[in-house]
Image (cartoon, rainbow, N blue to C red; front, side, top):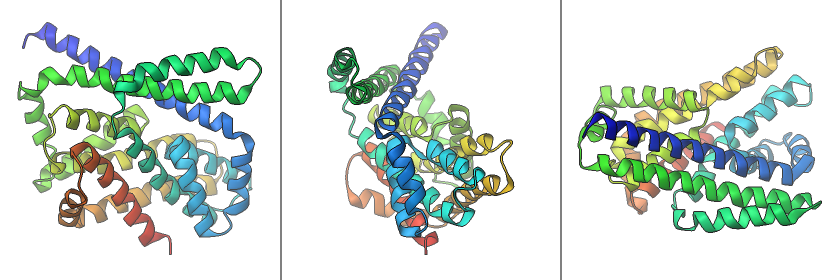
Length: 303
């Protein structure tokens, strides 16, 4: 493969990734604006009980992902509206909720992306002074753009499937060895920190799995764990200038995900057996591993 071809495919991958991130932001912003202040008020009221806080965090994580949810929690703590102790359950729920939103993405509905884009634009044009309809249009449009991005990324990765170069690079980060496991976690954390989105990292893994570049869960598992650590950077950066309790909540988020990744490494054989046993193709296995790790960790810590 020539240098020009590689540069073209890299540009296609980056363009698809940009569409994916833009679509994810459109969906999150549309859902958040549609919910308005009512969900934020609900979050403040019910977090005094840890189970309710966990449920609220899961709901918010599914809607806007863990980073924005945790930033909202940091803002509440900084304003004196929430305590550090009550924030922990919300953070645990936000981590689980993020994985549930990626379960939807794992179904690879890219065949419907153009219809969703057309419908989303039509809803926004027809909304007029009806904000709810306009926000719904933004959600549908974001849904279409997100899957269009996955489609573009998949077309960019496709030619690399037979070249062997990408597979060779990914083999170094495989969970088949201790060194590969640690390298995969570091790479996943670094890429997620750069993208400021664990969803984008998991989405790229979906594309690699759907294109046949990734062939088994061991190749992706360490990268999944790394993405769960890298997503904490959003909150850490956002606590600059806040009070000590708000900064402690961000550190708690980081510690939970780092210790959770360590526990998942210790339970590696269990996950590599249990997730394929649940069933589904490799794309769904990656999504299930993402969910199962965070769910097990949360259930251990929540009590």
